[in-house]
Image (cartoon, rainbow, N blue to C red; front, side, top):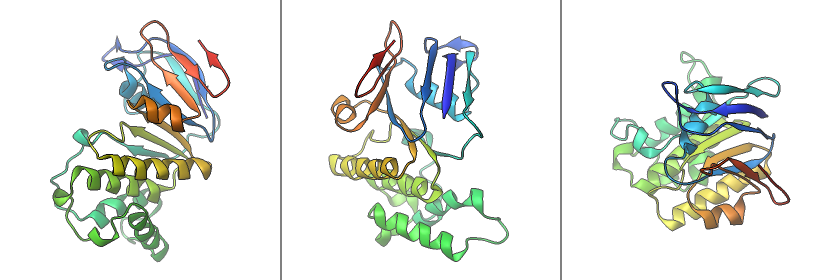
Length: 217
């Protein structure tokens, strides 16, 4: 799905990661791991198209897919006066007209997503009233509504309780089993080793890939 060729990620022409070559295969589930400051989130934002590469390149195998994006919570506005249902419904907008509004099938997708994350009773609550775990569940619901072939998640478990982490991990595994490609920045090494078939480690010396079978520099 994504082919990287000596790709270096960073900001304002300053490299943060070392050059990286490799392939994110369609239908894979990959954790990006490494020490703080090694450029995990920067690499993810580069692959998502939010910032340009410092050097090298990456390309899509075929047409660029729709990307489901889950940002770090601290990068989001949490006091905006909209309801949980409205926030989750934003995941539908790439497919619908702003003038026509949400069709019945889209409204049903939103309702199902809220139920899957356990927020169906909070649909009309404004997002500023949510706890950290509830807010993260809402963001996952928005990603579920998108039904995107590629999902990128930037530290999805930071600042939430263990029960929420387990519930969200179960949703990620569901998406993976359904054929969606997942790429996530994570810190929990135990969770990574238990659930992720592929790992991209941004080590200080050289990035490396790890799968269930092979380790390649």
